[in-house]
Length: 565
Image 1 (spheres, rainbow, N blue to C red):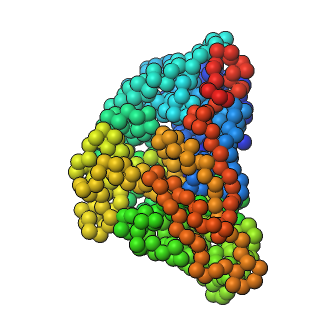
Image 2 (cartoon, rainbow, N blue to C red):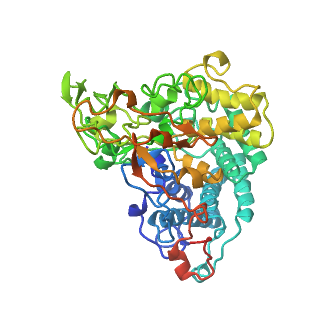
Image 3 (cartoon, one colour):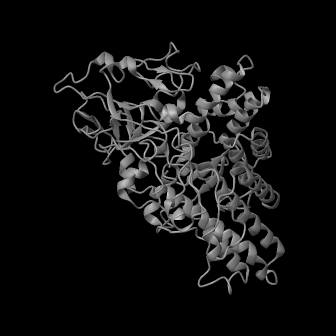
């Protein structure tokens, strides 16, 4: 879960850099390196580290909140000195430099290394380099384009290459990787990049850059691999994101994390941020009202249109993924009943078989979840038992390819049976039924217009991929950040001093928010029965791109800046 949420928050782990890292990875030089298969594999394996793989920070979107704390994106103050931006840039160019060095030197090992091994490792490296350029162009736009090592003196004069020139290179490199990588490995425990990952990166890159036909074709290539048995949707959505799901055939790529191998989050405080306070945590990272209200009712309608919605019982008659991703009130969670109601000052302990003080309600603990909700997705009892989080970080999975295929097809004007099937496979899995059992879930149908299907796919992406780091770039590419990230973050009103501490008719919501065509909620009709937690700000004149790090521009006057930074 850590890498899913904190794709960018590794600045403290990486020293600051004053220029592009164009050096070779070997120590002390590459002169004696790359001489045999072991050294080639060492160079490639180093780029499998989590530092070089991530989705975006979930706090950059409108789903996840950290108490009353903002960040440089939602506070609108991102600038060229931002540590997270600098680290993102630095890690990408470190990886690119190491790939370039490998490609120049790999043939030194030709005499003692099978050609097939060199070819596979080259394909892996070219995929990794393409992935890094995908990350760079989607966040910074035009960037320095390096396909080979550069002497140090030349690095001070490198200019930015137009994004439009780099994107075809990304696609061609991924095509090469797809042609030269296996679809799978003999052991399910082996984690190396595959043909399917090459297609998946291509599909996401094409989607984010509005190359609709390319996105559709690449996503379909992954879907065809699923048809041949390489991939399959995991039957249980909730289980997919905990230990039991780590070897699921739905996963196209994840970065392995394991306590026994000492590759995990050892920060006890991090784990506690997600845990309920009664279970010993802080309850400080919690779902926004916006994501809670984004889950449709089981009739397929948003909450402000469905007669099934009950604001006093918000989990009832809702998309099953809601209760799989967010802790339902009054249900067992990490050894205790979870109940944030202000009058529930004690709750049942399943561990001790008795009532205990309920510090998950703000009438007892002022810093309990400000929205009353807590995350469930990817969290299980082991977090509370071990105070360790070592779930694998899922970066690409089959469900994304189905929805990418559907979205790209709709943008191309296609709303045929295959598009409906792609959407319905994902929606039906949430309900635990076959996609053909269209009477058992709110299926996409041929009667829907292209506009309705487009709206449906966007909502589907939001709830399906919550906490997986995809929401931010969806807001950016749909040009919705200027709307969603300028609305205030709202939470529960302060409880009354004495019981009843809240009007029963207004718990947990005093009204039903209006949901607009873009899925953005308006809480105006709540009046005073809601509390402002945080003001969001997003500057549409500049924030659709990130700033080029100032450290780069200080040493290279040819490095231009993005507008308005």
